Image 1 (spheres, rainbow, N blue to C red):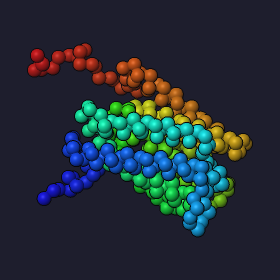
Image 2: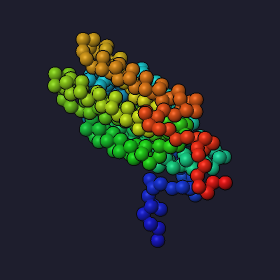
Image 3: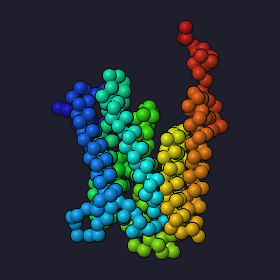
Length: 289
């Protein structure tokens, strides 16, 4: 009788059977197409069903202005680039390199689940079911957080499109959707809460930059902070929110560069800790030939 780990699609495995790989290829591609088509369609078209107010994604964004309103152009570019990079991730599943295939398949279940949850979020969001859409974002945040902490060492061609890109967006979207969900988004109390909670983007990004040296999370969050800052500037020039957003963007971007440049040149940022010597430079251990 098969044990639970054999049946659990999210269980961590060292290798995958040919049948599993084929299943991942089909479901990953189909769920990605579903996510892309739904997002693009509702960027430009409002739904024609449902009994609540129905708008496009960005129609909802600007109809419910809050301290976390996004700039449609910047965030749309973020998603466009992310979707293109995800095609590269999907390509790993069709590679002749078994190591690439197994690495891509290892995050496949979470990625498929992310696509389905994103599809559900869009369908609910454009139909003004903001509480239910927030619930799906929370579930997806748990899904992607679990994915990150279990699979954060894969190549950037897998990590960025399948892990850090969707996770950064979901974290920011929790605040965006949550602010829309709350009545009186423009009230003084709501603005104070937004002024406080926006700093969690900086804390969250710095956690991954400092602990995991993950410059992709820093860059993703800096782009989304820029989107927030631009939208807030055009909404209310005399306000703190856009200043905070651009400050967060700048700090994250600087630390992203500090980590990324040494990584690209084959070096490591130690943050004051002693770095491990390369094998060629370390002292021989007992039993070494």
